[in-house]
Image 1 (cartoon, rainbow, N blue to C red):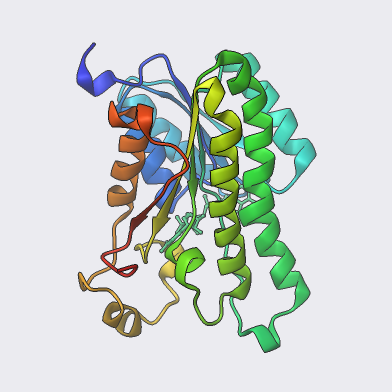
Image 2: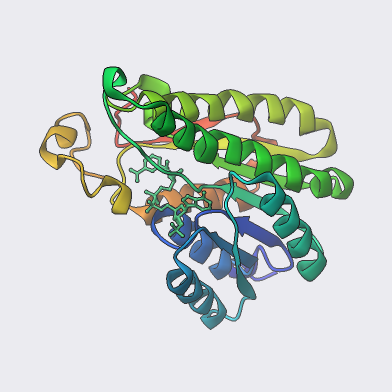
Amino acid sequence: MNQTQILSGKVALVTGASRGIGKAIAISLGKLGAEVVVNYSSSEERAKEVVNTIRSFGSKSYESRFNVADEESVNKSINKIVEASGSIDVLINNAGITRDGLLMRMKSSQWDEVLDTNLKGVFLCTKSVSKFMLKQRRGKIINITSIVGLIGNPGQANYSAAKAGVIGFTKTCAKEFASRGIKVNAVAPGFIETEMTQKLNNEEILKAIPLGKLGSTNEIASLVEFLVSSEASEYITGQTISIDGGMNI
Ligand code: NAP
């Protein structure tokens, strides 16, 4: 097989793939020949652009709008994807939001929104997809967590709790699914240049990054590509791999 088409015949669902990190991951899996389902919640035009980019490499792709935190839409949409594409071999749980504020001022609605999207969403999508992966006896699941889930961050009690939860969830799923050949890992980015980090104070952040610069979405996509398609990835499960310019040293 041509190395550049290593994922040919595989179906990948990337949540939150209309922009940022999810977009870069979707495009990189499409370049490797995967059929890529581009999930989004509201940015339809941008999701369509991602689909068109993937199609321009000769790979199949289509968009699927659903809210990862809504159980009924998740189950309906994932059933439809399997009907249309025949399987799901790769799930990238990437969709995420922030609702920052110091704990003393954090409203329970800010807590709920972040936990619902960033943690419950990962549970719902994994549960729904695993039904098919368990029958297939194969699959790769990558959960996008964060440096903040490992070391905390003032103003992000909700986000850091959700992202730490994703790490524990990843380990449990890896143990539950290992006997069926399904590998589950997490990727913990540091600060990456996307719309999510646009409002942050870059000067302050740069001081905390030993490599002295923000990361790029392509760097994250390249690590995900490794966890999905390399020979080594057949023997890696339950891990959280940091990609953060050294912030977690
Ligand atoms: P982003 O640019 O804000 O993009 C977020 C994506 O998630 C969009 O595609 C958005 O869709 C989608 N989304 C949001 N809520 C959703 C929902 N309820 N259901 C389905 N899709 C939803 O974010 P990003 O910076 O690329 O971050 C992607 C992931 O990496 C997140 O999990 C984030 O926590 C994590 N991360 C980011 C950084 C960073 O520095 N950027 C660092 C560590 C971890 P619409 O466009 O339709 O709204």
